[in-house]
Length: 227
Image (cartoon, rainbow, N blue to C red; front, side, top):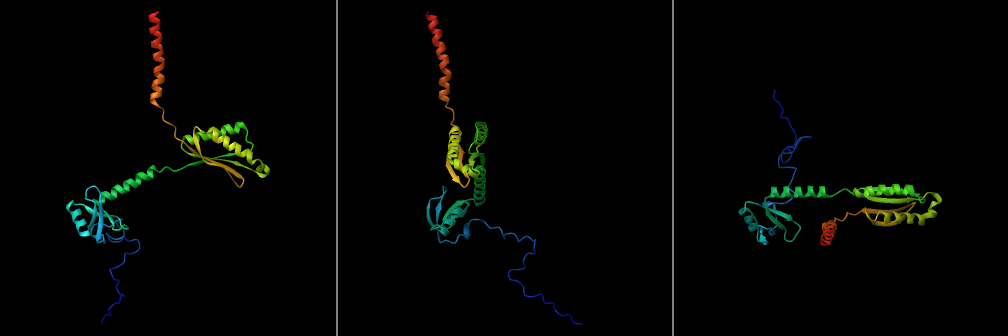
């Protein structure tokens, strides 16, 4: 009995697709963020950098300059007219870019805001307690958002709340600068304070002060010897 040929349907162009969960073939998927060497489509480019004579070159000449140095031609500003390129080792360039980005993220400190709440008629004991906490927050580099909360008819004392916040800022002037003056938002009057860096001590002044007692002692000793 003759077997009928099995029909599997039309083949997809470009070969079979990867099955779900299957990795795509090497070279597909992840692409370089820059066009390099023969991938650059512009007819002429502007070369910049330390290892080339800067200027506008036909793409063929720019590629030849890169090959002569055994380096890559990297398109770093594709939208410029003409596109801007550098002659560098591309892998080394990517590594430096990644390292620079990592350093920038590490330096970008997360801003922390600490809140301190007052009532419109806060007594001195509670005020000094919260003032001490604010000093600690500012010393550790956090911002301080202090506010007076007006409950019910206490909104009539909003001027008193403003005076309290301004007094708070004044008592913290050694540690903070006012980023936002008191503002009334609904039932809250808020002031924002940001930490200031302590000024470095002047060594010259310390040396002068430390030498003064010794000089006075020497002068006293000389006067005693003369007598």
